[in-house]
Amino acid sequence: MRNNSEGINVEDLRRDMREDDYHLDGNASGGLLREIFGREVTPEPATCGACGSTNPMGGLMVHRNAMGDVVRCPGCAAVLFVVAHTWGGYVVTFDRLRSLRLADGS
Ligand SMILES: [Zn+2]
View (cartoon, protein in one colour):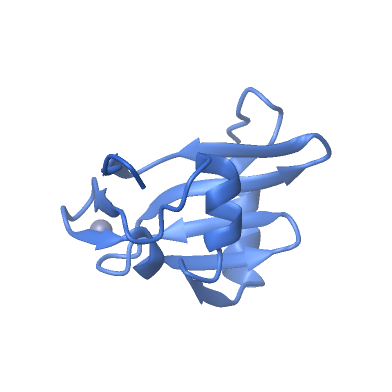
C-alpha cells in the first residue's frame, strides 16, 4: 500500500487501470495535459527513466478510467506518471518520467 500525500492509493489506481482500462494516445489527453501543465505539451519530448526512450507526450500510452489516467511509455510500458481526478482538481504522481523538455514560446 502506498498512499501519496493526497491520500490516494496509487497502487490501487494502477491495478484498477490494468483490470479495467482502455488505451488512448497522449493526443487524446491533450486537453487534460494542457490544463495540468498550463500549455500545449503533446509535441514536447518526454524521456522514460526505465528504458531511456524519448517520445512526444502525444505519443505516450494513456490508460483511462473514471479514477484517472495512467500514462505509460510506448517503448517499455513503464508508468511515467499518474493523474488522479479528485474533487478539488488533479493529483499528478510522477513515477518513471525522467524528463519533459518544454521549448520556449509554446
Ligand atoms: Zn520506457
